[in-house]
Length: 432
Image (cartoon, rainbow, N blue to C red; front, top):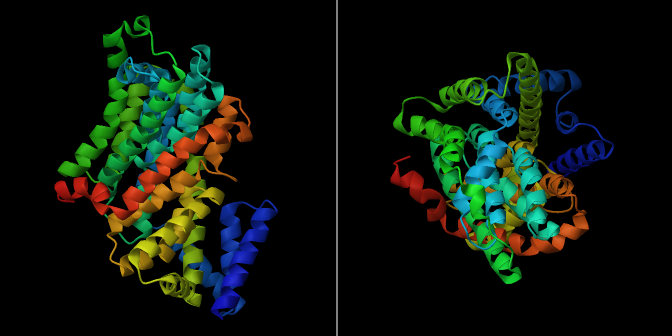
């Protein structure tokens, strides 16, 4: 029965995706087909609808549309150029300073917008042509932009951590956020170290002095946007507000900045901004509902327990088990977006991780880190395709320049996986 259910679930899902059916619908139909193995059609349909509705009837999920709206407001608020100028100040006069500017800008903008694609497009669209103009190889510039874009996805506020917290049964959002801070900064530093070595070897120019003249104006315009990150985390850690309340505060703060401070959004633009937020929220909520149905179908047919036994049967050594999990998650990340992957595979891998004594916060961080790496990895990493398009280079042209960055990211991934203190020292220090 388990083998038959697994085959039906996997084959129906794969066929529907292959013919272009949206992923949420593919998940739901494949799950229903699996449930029909055991239940009659009337009970199966009723139970499926009930599970899908119940899965999105959660107070914690209110944070998702608010953080999405906040990110869209900031994304439409014209802050990318301001963050680029601010990043130039931080990059300093060191070899590869413009590539460092790209990395810092992607990290800041990605965390504010909660989107690697938005960061790669907004920051990379400015920095890649600028680097080429200053004598940098365009393929190298595109590679830096691609490799650094996902760093912001693990720097709070991250919707991925919110979804993981919900699906995993209530893992502390504050602890995930603080651990994500550390990992996001380390990701950015890893890319900057590789960029420094390559830039020094190739003798790439640094930012000229005249570009950093108006320091006060640059800081004044950029810091209010960056403060959003610290306001949200500071409020959650001090207990002033919860993660859900923080999401609403993020919307208010973003609106005040874009409408009154930067004056880059007008009242006439608000309907379009709201429509974008509603569309993205609808997609994510449908994914959550469909993925909960898949989790129900798998649990009902015993698939997670069978997969856990299969993985644990490979070895009883936690080092080997973690390596297998990493390889599987990296593979999943190359063919699936982060949100649906979290929703589908958390119920499968979480019992394995807890079974070998992995802390849920540590697991959540390296779990999502794996999926983020997958977004910039062939064959279908969305970040890789978007970054190549932004850099105006072909995929095959940018893969070779990406290799040293892949190596640095993989080393970081292994360190995070096998040294839990990297993820946990800050949450533990703060008593989370």
